[in-house]
Amino acid sequence: MREGRISIVVPAFNEAENLPLLKDRLTSALEGFGDVEILIVDDGSHDRSAQILRDFAAEDTRLHYVSLSRNFGHQSALKAGLDRASGACVITLDADLQHPPEHIAEMVESWRDGFDVVNMVRRDDPGTPAFKRVTSKLFYRFVNAISDFEIRPGTSDFRLLDRRVVDALLRLEERTLFLRGTLLWLGFQQCYIAYDPGTRAHGTVKYNFRRMISLALDGITSSSTRPLRFSTYLGAVMAGLGMTYAGYALLLKIFAGAPVSGWASLLVGIMTFGGVQLLMLGIMGEYLGKVLVEVKGRPSYIVREQSEPGAAAKIKSPVAALQARLSNSRM
Ligand code: UDP
Ligand code: MG
Image (cartoon, rainbow, N blue to C red; front, side, top):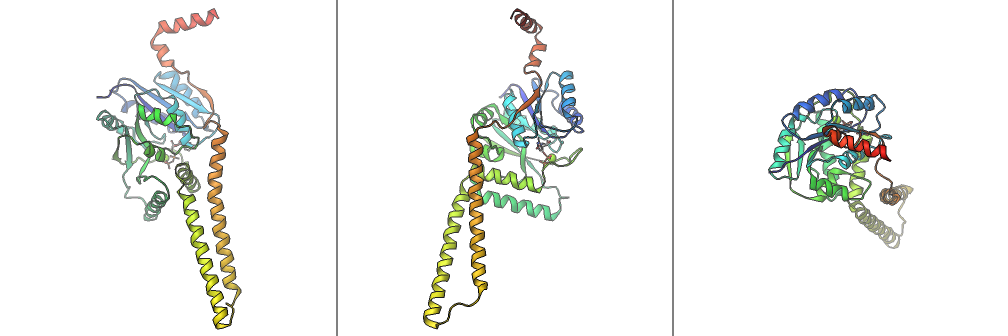
């Protein structure tokens, strides 16, 4: 059976109203687990989050925080948390309480049973409008068709990772992280548990449609080169069609003596080919942009402030704290 510290990593962007509630729910959900740590990543919030987290950390030695220098995005915030988590397993969940902390016990149980990745799968809310359900399904179908992995609908970044998985993940040197895809690439023993999502306690959702599209594009282009292959095929098909049409026009001229009439066909041809070329350039551009980001090698996030690493350990051991102070004063 697996033992050891349980780390909880929570990315939070402008979630000041949710933080106290989150802390309470986490604290009661974690009762009975001996060694736990809670790591809240403030992803450049503009509200009172940073101050609240400072107070939390002062009150509870199991709670740590990292404040990033600006908003780096959900995935980078998760990375900042994973970089600092020290547990034998790490659970990531959202700060808005849509990922109910009450499921932690169940997740840990699966981990103790030997699973390395425990994915939580959102049950369909019967209240979701049909339109939203259909578009969401189409979205997953599309993403899965043009990427190398198969993302299960309803999975999000609510999951448990074993230490080995976290270490493997952190060894990857890529900047553009799309955890849902990367974890499938990593493999390991994965399992899925269904849950009913909570409703957002306070505030508004940070992902709008544009950000969803951008996340999907990042996900696809960071894990697969299939779209490039697709543009090659599309180019071949369009060139074939063009040549067929040219042959047809030529034959018509030779045998019927009349040229194909009308500028409509001309315009359609120009527009279609122009569109296809732009599409392919766009796809290539996406990849080129990714290459630029990776080549620059900038970090995925910058830390502005964080609770003192190992603060909990120091408080637990006054002797060590005294020794540290003595060695500091000698310098
Ligand atoms: N979040 C973040 N940085 C961002 C956007 C979101 O850390 O730039 C956090 C947010 O505070 C929340 C989680 O990521 O804890 C999920 O965001 P949200 O609830 O807005 O989106 P949902 O997943 O519910 O669509
Ligand atoms: Mg949410």
